Image (cartoon, rainbow, N blue to C red; front, side, top):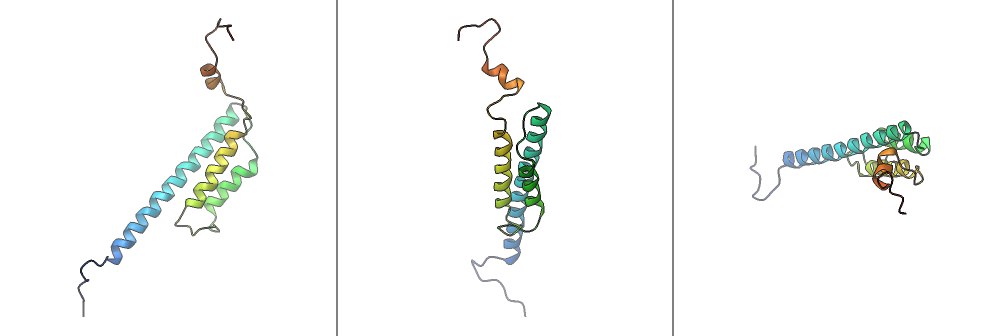
Length: 115
């Protein structure tokens, strides 16, 4: 016997679809941060700047990939946090040194000796 859902009741399928969509969005955000971390590390290496401890980079990548997490895997917020910390560590490893593009922005035009 099939019962009609009560008025105001939420359909189970709707809840599952919304949960899957949210999990997919958070996973996409985690992958976006991972791509940014990899690009930042690659750009720092190309510029000859320090990239921070190697174990921080690989530890963050492994934390995203491995199933053992602080929060269950459909919730990638802890993974995003670890990746952001690794990104901050890589950027902070430059120790205040800037690449050529930033040097051009911070210095005055050639011949400007008033400093």
